[in-house]
Image 1 (cartoon, rainbow, N blue to C red):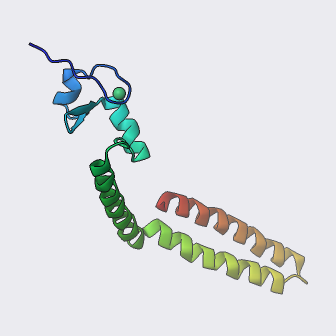
Image 2 (tube, protein in one colour; image 1 turned 180 degrees about the vertical axis):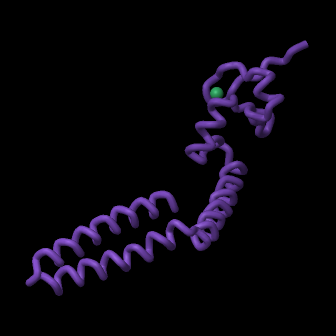
Length: 127
Ligand SMILES: [Zn+2]
């Protein structure tokens, strides 16, 4: 005797194997299929009509923010990006101070541009 579970969001039946694998989620007797749960996880709003779930979501959100913050503090890429950013400012400053010697100024400016690109890349990785 199979009791068919219907996804609360897309109204498709929830396959038993998704339930077995824990991909489909159950909340207050309502089922969310694997696809909708995945979308919900992405948008952090799988059970938007459920007040209790909303509170849980907020709690989860706060915890994930804490995770991101503590992760960022220890993030090597972000630190490297910040250090490079300082060198960029330095490079631009030297470039302007050497503006009378165009070759040197351009060399420093080029270096600053390269470092800036690296810094941005590290910030992106560190995100
Ligand atoms: Zn669904």
